[in-house]
Structures are given as structure tokens and as C-alpha cells.
Length: 421
Image (cartoon, rainbow, N blue to C red; front, side, top):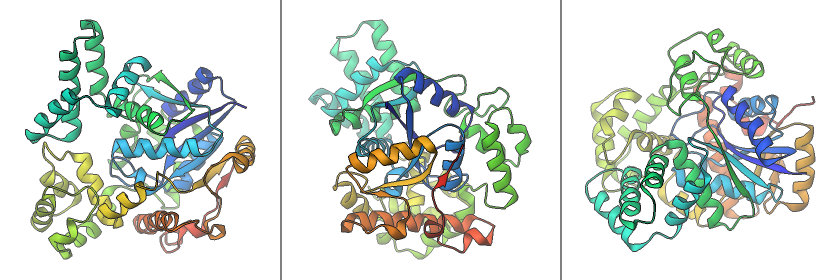
């Protein structure tokens, strides 16, 4: 048995994901696959289009053997923490041999070079970084500029290699790739990294005219009340059926604006000092959040009035989701200091997934959860991490129109999906 690991959101599972799965299995010569998937709130600070069990079902129906949930504190976090939590979870299964991720050039060597530098940054790099941060730009932008300056001054790369490195640094998919490699090295994992070239649709592309479209394009189409039928060409038939059935049952699609009233209420009723406790709020940003919460209406207006060069859109989106879910800076730091995810939670599996779970019972370094009412947390940190996951689902369900979903604690009533065929 050779096991492929994937780090995903599947929001929703589309043809590009299917291509990535098939190519990754080929490249790594794997017989089985495990996907770590974000739950109901995602890395870019948005709620998922559909709840986590529906998206996990899409993945297994699309060919993934086992889907595990990435705890909320890592799923809705910076690229660095999202990647670390995901890699740590795959490593904790004890069965994953390879990790394969998409990148813009399929250039593992360049990505490895950057990740190694960022794990043990030289003094010169840190000087460049601090200079850019003093200019008031965001940390990702400052790091990008500092990397370019360092490699330019280091003078160990040819002009052609330097051009390739600069291109690698810029792309959002490559940024995540670098963080995956950093995560593997940080925990000294035996998992072998691989990368494959992404095809056609870019990370932020909004085109749905070809057979490969980005998840962003699909969501924007649905957000603009576009017909589901127009997406047949870009998603597998199984994904289409799950979306169609879910929309008929009024359990999606879900977007940030479904929670805008709750978020605006929380900002207006909270003292500025309380906002300062929220995870990723610092440098007095709580004052601007409070001011903009009082002077604007609606999610889009709120985000646009808070964001700046220093605090880009995705960071503001994440902060607002942390506020909604009541995830404080102390919460995250306390949990992260324990070394990552505290459990392995199963969302969906097929027959090969059963084989993986059987092997994981022998080799995993964390407890495996199939049903949370049968799980006794092994320590206070596991209990707190799980409580945040449950709270996230309970709040997410408030955006669902169907009362059968919006009035029950889904974490206690939904079982992992099992695909028989």
C-alpha cells in the first residue's frame, strides 16, 4: 500500500481537483489517497459553499478514499498555519507516504530553496523584511519583496534562475506550496513532497467557459445567481448531483453575507478592548474595525472600509470569521503550542478508506474520531479544539434555510459518509 496525501478545501470538488487527484496518484505511484479538508470555514476567511459532510461526499464520490477534517483553528488561518496543521494531520495518520500539491511551474527545486531559507532566515533577509514592514505593507507582500532582494544580493543564482524564483514567490498557489514544504521540514516528516503543474484556470480566475474552472469562478457564478446547469462542464456529475440535491433542500449555497447581521451586531456591541483579543487583530486594528462597524452596513462595505495595504482583504475576512466564531489570540496560541491538531476526524470514506482506517488504528499518533459522542478528549486542549469545531458548525448552520439543518447540532447527528461502490 502506497498512500497519497492531499491538502484541500473542495469548495466545491471540480474537474481541476479530479485532474489533480488522478495525476497525483500517477506521479506518486500511490494505491490509496487521503485528503485533509477544511471544515465549514475556510482559509480565505469565508464560509464553505456547502457543509463539510456534503463536500467530503463530493470528494469520495470523485475518487478520494478517505477525507479527514482540518480543525477550524487551522482551517481558517494564515497560509503558514493552514499548511502546518494540514501537514501535521497527514503525518499523524502514520500511513501517508507522499504529499502532492499543485504549483504554477511544477518546480519543486525552487520551492524547496525558498522554504529552506524561510525556516532558518539569514540575518540579511530579516533586515530586508523589517524594512518593508516599516513601509506599512502586509506581511506576505513584505516577505515577497524581502525574498527578491535577498536572492538578488546573494548573487548565487543565474539571472534565469533568479527570474524563476521571483515568479515562484508571487503566485498564491506557490505560497501555499512553500508553506507545505516548510511544514514537512519543521516536523521532520518522512512524507515525500511532489508537485504537479496546475492546468488552465488560475487561482482567482472567474472563467467557466472551458472544462476546467477555478472554485472561485464556480462560487462567483452561484453567488451571482447563475444557473447550476451552466456548471455541468466544469464539475463531475457526482458533484453536480450533490449540489443540485443540496440546493433543492435549501442547505446551500452559503456565502459570507449570510452572517453579516451577526458580525455587524458583534462589532457594534463589543468594546474595543474585546475586539483586540480576537485572533490576528493587532497594532490597534480593533479601533478601525469598531469605527467601520459603526459607519458602514453590509459585509462587502465593512471589509472594503477596513482593508488596506497593511491588512489585505483575506486577512480582514479571516478576522471577521474569528470574531463570529469567538476565536481569540490566546485560544489559537494555546492550541498551536501543543503541536497542531489533537485528533483525526473522519468525514467520508470508501472501501479503500476502510483499509486505511484499519491501518491507521495501528499506526496513527492521534485518536481517530468517527462519531464525536463516542470520543473522550484525551486532554483539555483536544477538548477545546473540538469545542471550537462544534461551535463553528452550530454557527455555520444559522446560514442554512432548511430548519432540519439549522436547528440541530450537526456534529452530533451527522455520521461520516460511506461510499459503498
